[in-house]
Length: 227
Image 1 (spheres, rainbow, N blue to C red):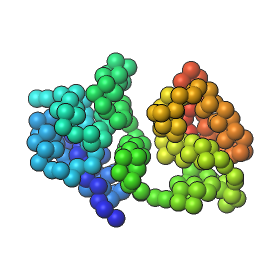
Image 2 (image 1 turned 90 degrees about the horizontal axis):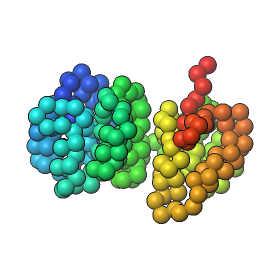
Image 3 (image 1 turned 180 degrees about the horizontal axis):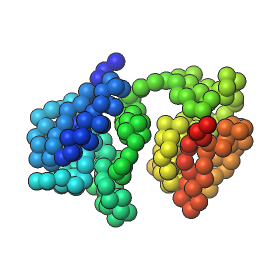
Image 4 (image 1 turned 90 degrees about the vertical axis):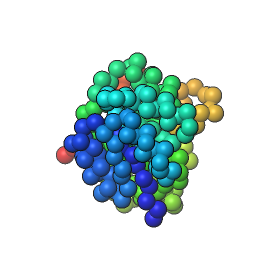
């Protein structure tokens, strides 16, 4: 399988090592930069970078400046890391064309899952055609779902919705984000469509439907209950 190259930019060497170790375990190639200026030098010297993980708070040149510079030349996916978690920062990030926004502290496993999901969306990357979570198994190639070994019948959108939830375990997903990702940006229907599909999906999943948690006033989160 082709190795995807990830540029990790953070002024904290421990953070870079943590992220790098998890990415390398998943067979990604990783290059590192300790500040924004070095990041731009590396990015423009290497045309094979598939994704950039970029810290906001850095010396010399912060993540926003780096993002602006990259975006003026490239549409490469960018994940921003920040310790602030302020909504205005998040909005600025999306205005600049950031693909994902993750607040520190974060789970490296969740970060890697986001990397894989973005690359699947943008490059056709496939880490695994079979997803598993809490007794649910999704075979993406065969478009089949089973629960504890028993196949269940899902509509196309129910399948896409469940796959999106499982690929984004532990992440709070707004209705708008789900609409944009599962129904795509050209869908002009009502966000309540999601609630209807979630209700049907929960019903078909039986007791596993409890993994889809409602976040009141926002959306949903898929989380397997720990024993």
